[in-house]
Every structure is written in structure tokens, then in C-alpha cells.
Image (cartoon, rainbow, N blue to C red; front, side, top):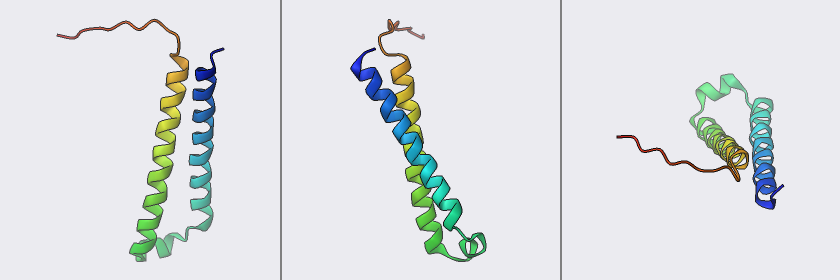
Length: 79
């Protein structure tokens, strides 16, 4: 197995764990009634959710890149 392919798998697993950890911590510390009333909580929660979403997106990207590593690339032209 290629070293870059292993690196992509490691990054995808690490970023998946980061996104799951952030989502878990948000569910533990969030009081939903206070969330509706307070804009500061909303901004902080949305920033953490954005970080979790970006981590999940990069995890999927690196996983797909690792799966396609070494395959022959065929370019298809759509007219």
C-alpha cells in the first residue's frame, strides 16, 4: 500500500473523529431553551458546527481520494 494512500486514510479517520467529538460536545453543553433566546450562543454553536462540517467534508474528500489512489484516470468530455 502506498504511503500517500495511508496518509489520506489517516486524515479522513482523524477528521471524522474531530467532527464527531465536536458534535458530541455540543449536545452535552447546549441548553436548547437558552439557545433560542441568546444570539451569542447561536453564533458560537454555528461556528463549531461549521468547523465540524468542514472537518466532515475533508474527511469524505480524503477518503475518496484514498479509494481512487492509483486508479487509471479517464477524462470524459461532455459536449
